[in-house]
Length: 167
Image 1 (cartoon, one colour):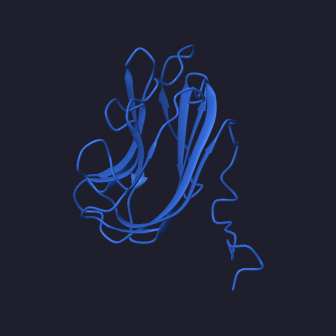
Image 2 (cartoon, rainbow, N blue to C red):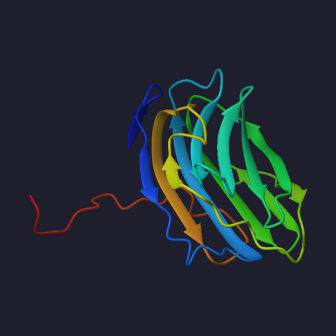
């Protein structure tokens, strides 16, 4: 989906009953930026009280994750660029690990025993918890309840994502 960076985003209500991500999970997405100067929201889980935010600020993609006690961990994923970029964030116990384009992992630490906090508000794609919108295309978004050891499938796409009988 292509977003204009001004006022377009996708928003969906989060059903908090199955939300608990626990201590082991993976978030992956692929984006292509049109503009990366300034602050741009990519993904926000919880528009009122966030549990997780991916954004671009100061020319860098960053991940922010809050645990259930409200403690924030911020990891700078890497430099944003005007090309297709893939991001993977995994949590395995106390370790948050991010990879940009399947490169070297950048890590951060959070509580080894606390879950990610339950978000309050919508799940937003192409907007953060404020009024910072994403300018570019979001090509892929996966939230998995496993820890993936690599990001090798990051550019795999279904070439025709509609049913075979649709013309």
